[in-house]
Length: 472
Image (cartoon, rainbow, N blue to C red):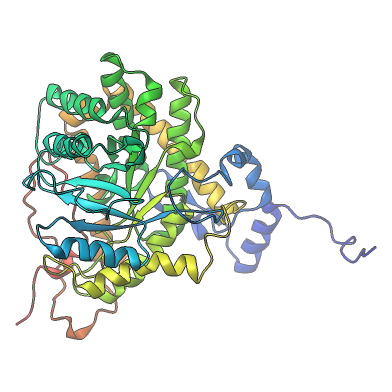
């Protein structure tokens, strides 16, 4: 038996920290190496098995099975590669659907305006075997009514329709201020229309707005969970059971560039939703809540489209490692109204490469056992739980929305991020550092005035700081 290391006494984390301070001739480890991405969040430079004792509970959330999607793959880890398509009244629509499916897409985000002629959405068989999500461009209730009317007319089995609607009445309140009765009415209609479908989700919570508006992960979880509690309060009072509401739930999240933090954010979100379901005495597995991940606009630049391509890759990787069941990678070209076919193809192929060339579908949970991600997930779960408790004490999501506390909190976080970019404390390659000289844009010293009402949260990008002024 090899006893080579028997003469070396075991070392704990404290001993290693003392050695670091001794070598660097410093007296304070905290002053030297602890970073704080936002108030209330502190990060050490390393974590050990010693630390992992504090989050042993996470083991029960590691290596969980996939959400049930109708995919042909039998790999241990599965996700649906989604593509957005707008319906058009000509042959180009079916041709585009055929092209993206042959190119590796698993499902379609179908944009509908409600002005489509009746009886044409399910014309042909392009939709069979697809994951199909409806993105309403106008009144979501009337668009769903038209969608379901066509299903009934064609006598399509409801059990074969897999997907849902990507519309959140809560997110819409940050665009159009409404009375609470209007919010309640929309939630009731959406659930009433979709509750009998086995695989079609009607209750969408769009948490993207908090990140895209400038918030941090702590705020995303606090206000996102606040929406879920508000939804449960509204619809249980109308006679629906918590079980059927959680069954009809889809959570839409944006994934930005802070790679490890985003993975931990997604993991802690799933943990918190599962634990919240337990408080409502709903017995479900953690994998039964589908998460729909979108690569974010917050991190993208009009000046550096090819940098966007790299950002899309890291964000896609974070989304699938964090446990997203459906992922849409936005095209890297954001200048102009319609991305090119090249940009769409590159976006679609990112997830294909991560699967076919990186083999990330062969391991169910590649991040299981990571000390750093364990710490981040545990800490974010704590912050999310504490934030939700405080939110409920202050009047819940609706009370904070009406008092503009949510909006002010997100906008304060946004300005802190912008100030860090202006000062150079935060570096974004291609934007405030190492910009291409041929871009033709000048750096601004402060953001231009934003047209945003007090009740609104607009999805904005930090690159507005650097792209408002263009040289001739």
